[in-house]
Length: 193
Image (cartoon, rainbow, N blue to C red; front, side, top):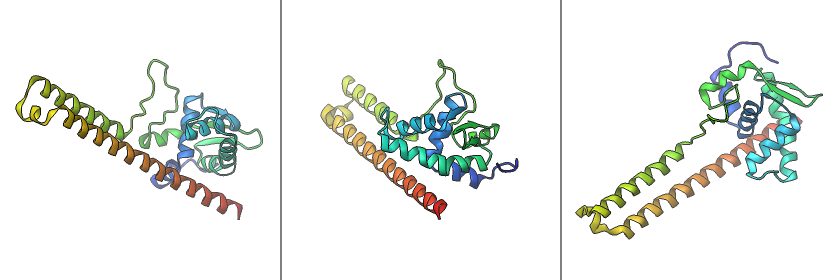
């Protein structure tokens, strides 16, 4: 484990730029701050794939990368305590240093107050919905400039906007996942050599 100096911004960004590490930290925060590596890898794999349980090969890949790369790195920085022999990992108080950069919290949220996981994309979708609602209302009350365009034209523009936004979001997410996987492979290859 590292000394107790405050983590610099570069180290924090390095930790958080990897989706698998972010998922691991989120799962630890949400599930009592301590998990076995097997449980953690199954939860992270489910988050990555959107399937529960995730396919066996994905669970195995997550397990290996957590055990060999991510958890030792987080342990070295003092963010987690990782016992490789017992295959157990727990958060330290140092996770609080990451809170300013993400929505991680070191304490479990109450069931009545779930943690906010809003993304910037949510605001775009909300904006399109509000514009659509306003334009639909304007057509309904007969505002001349809007009513001349017609409901079908307004609907077409709103659907096209939503489609473009969704396609952009899917593409961005795939690019980010590919970048994270490439980074994981480089780290794994570097650790093996």
